[in-house]
Length: 135
Image (tube, rainbow, N blue to C red; front, top):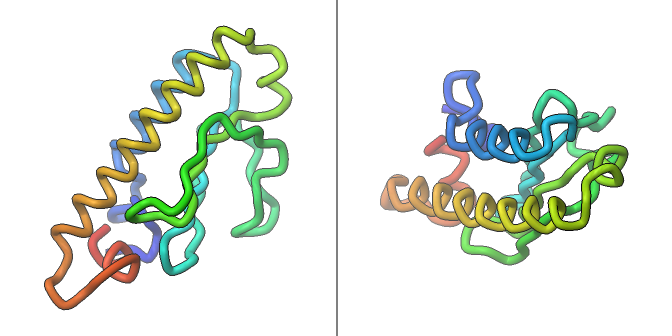
């Protein structure tokens, strides 16, 4: 098992890749990122190929604009879907609204997936510590 949320055997969970692919299909030239902070404060970031990465681990994305965010969920203190600033300006307002709607749905799916993994955790484990052991 991995200390990286949503990473199994060195591979990112297909559910996350699918959500990023869906966003990328809607705006093919844009970079997208996922930023998650678990209840124990651990940070996890995932990106598509076009999203600039932080130079320092656990730093914020250098050019990310938040499309959708959730705070104080059942599994995360904070969860965000971001788009690269440089590409966000080139996306129309209507398309930005469509991306935001899709990103909100994606955050809901991420929370539900994490909750399902917590439910499957060992009976004596609780909260975010269990997340680290069941992925």
